[in-house]
Image (cartoon, rainbow, N blue to C red):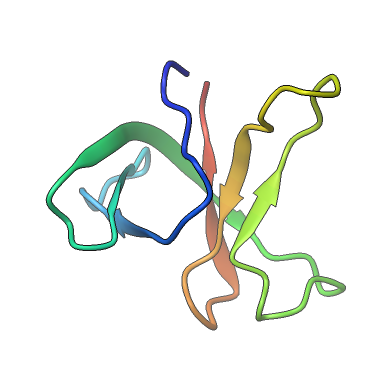
Length: 83
């Protein structure tokens, strides 16, 4: 909420290691933080390819979709954003 990411490359990282982990979204060079948000651990569905990094939500035409889940590289678990 409040952060719109234009097309580009971004860095996602865990900012804490708790049950409600914080995920930080930054510029590729890590100089600008766009978002730090609470997340919960979720399992990657078996049908979802390991190459999938993000799951986007649905929105009306012309509005940017929210990021629902981030899956770290080759991980079976991901982080669902709490909005």
